[in-house]
Image (cartoon, rainbow, N blue to C red; front, side, top):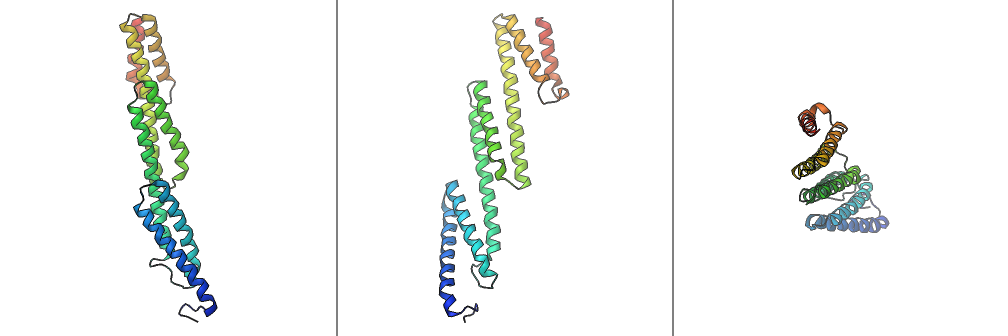
Length: 207
């Protein structure tokens, strides 16, 4: 029986398993640190966590495995995993929104921004921490505001263009569309009173 109270027959099998798992954990740690690829890093964290979980049974029997205890390693890498996912989601959303802001037409801008909302809905379930959820929800609100402003500006610009060309009927129609849009969106009219009053005045002027 050795210091870990293992009989000679058990030692070989257990120590071989330990060495293999520790090697895989150490190799994974190196790849997680060095790789720039998101999927590689997440994949390696999952492998590491699987083997750390397996080491817990040895620690339960007072057999030393890692320098830090398996629960400490598990907690650390669950935190790293969460942070990597959060960063990746933010990068994806920001990339889409940068494209949206550079769109040549309002329709292009809104289409791209809607892709960002779809991406948030797809990946929202990957985040558990309340502070991270709050950040993503704030981004979501900002994107919806961007879409709203872009749509309103599209109506108003089309109205101004028609007015400039002397197309009074078309201009009136577009101003009415803009007013209808504001009065039927999810935003309280009291918060958009200035825009609503301006549109009503313009409609009255053209009527």
